[in-house]
Image (cartoon, rainbow, N blue to C red; front, side):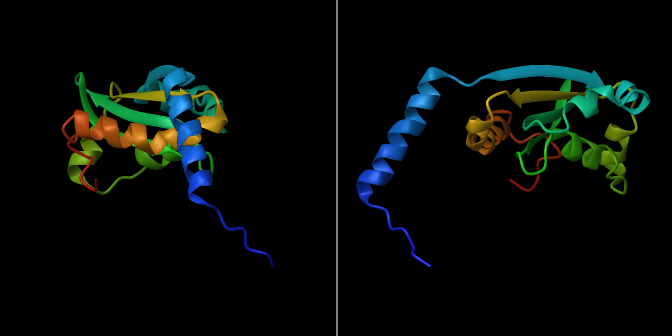
Length: 136
């Protein structure tokens, strides 16, 4: 098997492409729904099945958690995993509350998926680590 090797020029060309995409902006969509509605009607999460981006939880107008969903997993799977992650007493209070909202920032251009992790870390730091973002 032939292993391709790259030069510094290749690396710098990729940095240029990356920077150009940032400069031109990201194609994003924002949506939000309450946990009560998500549990009653699967259409919100069903639409997110193959989509990737950022998701976040809001309780009493305060951001409680920010997470990411890469294309390999998708927003639907990540959100459903989080809202069924019972066992932590404090988190249970968030996910059992029907008025808790789940927001999503969808990356419409799948080719921009690599910006997801950067945006997640940026938001977590700028929001001064929401209470349930302990791992970062």
